[in-house]
Length: 138
Image 1 (cartoon, one colour):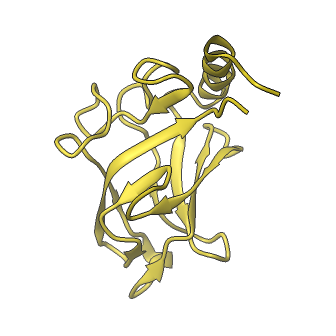
Image 2 (image 1 turned 45 degrees about the vertical axis):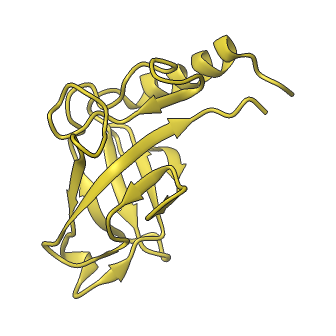
């Protein structure tokens, strides 16, 4: 199946509508324990599907109004479950009822979410320089 741009954007927007601005971004270890989270995504949470690129929706950065970038990162902080340092395996976006709507890859490059560090400890900040959802064409 091959989705044209309008269909990719519509499919992704439907997912975004399930999440809304009250969604949460949770970073998990390999055993799916949440080790860092943002419980209230800034602004609307995401730009509209297709606003920057076909089939993509970027997260809104810490300033609450523009997309995540080097100049407007999104910052997460490790929670108690992270302990002295735990590797982040993936991230999930949930709706306000904690239903997982999307699972994202995480790394220091070439992933859905790009972090400055993928090992996080309790109280440690990590900076997201790229964070987006993508609906592929096929």
